[in-house]
Amino acid sequence: MAPRLELPGPIIDAVWLAEHLNHPELVVADVRWVLGAPEKGRAAYESGHIPGAVFVDLDEDLAGSPGKRGRHPLPASGAFAAAMSGRGIGDDNVVVAYDDAGGSVAARLWWMLDVLGHRAAVLEGGIGSWTGELDTYVPERDAAVFSEKPWPADAVADADTVATAIERGVPVIDARAAARFRGDEEPIDPRAGHIPGAINLPWSGNVDDAGRLLPAGRLTDRFAAAGIDPAAGDEERPIVYCGSGVTACHDVLAIRAAGLGPVRLYVGSWSEWSSDANRPVATGE
Image (cartoon, rainbow, N blue to C red; front, side):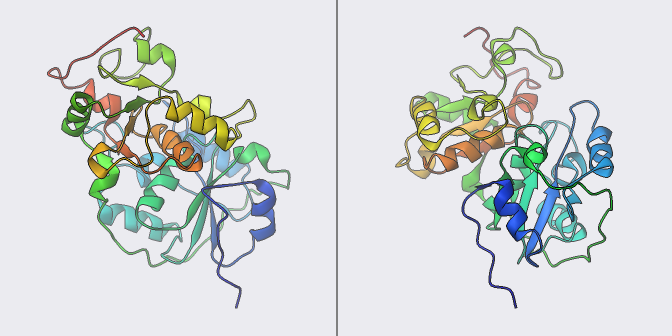
């Protein structure tokens, strides 16, 4: 029997993955996705993926139906458990997720597994860091036992919680690009701008040009400057959001890698906030 597989952290590199690719506990998950053209993610997977990787669909597996709760609300806990089971991911598996977007989509799967207590990591540099051969064979994994658990209340935030946090001076971080934060452009959501009082720290600032996470010291400086305190109590935990609760997970990942402690994800994010005419909107810096 192979020894229990232990992850070195929430980020692993291609060397580690290659060394452990055949471990029986490991499941590699391809989470490639394209905004406005989600079918391209699956097509990219089918044209070439890391050997043995399963495809995890952001819209089908990692989100509920879009609506008042945003474009990518959390699925019901039972639906998520069924999706993971169907992909051959079980309670005893270690999941390494990757994409081709700097980890900004793979981080959503990492976050969902992590908050439920599962061992998971993101491949640093994504598929572009993989120097081995790619495979077009789609593996057939048996359904696995993935126990249903409720989403932890201390890991998520709703719109009212965000509004209260702003009033209390708790850091609320917007992970979108600066142009969307300022309201210069808004390609998909109802209103342009940001939640008043939010701090703009785009997820893309967490990685270098190769999509690799910045050194921990630089990440620490980046997020500490925004007021993130690792000693904050549960009610003072910072909140992160983005367009629809996907790329904000990369800020959560980077904050974890920097050792700055737990934060909360506003899953509905701007897609929910901007849809509510009663919620205030700010523009500019």
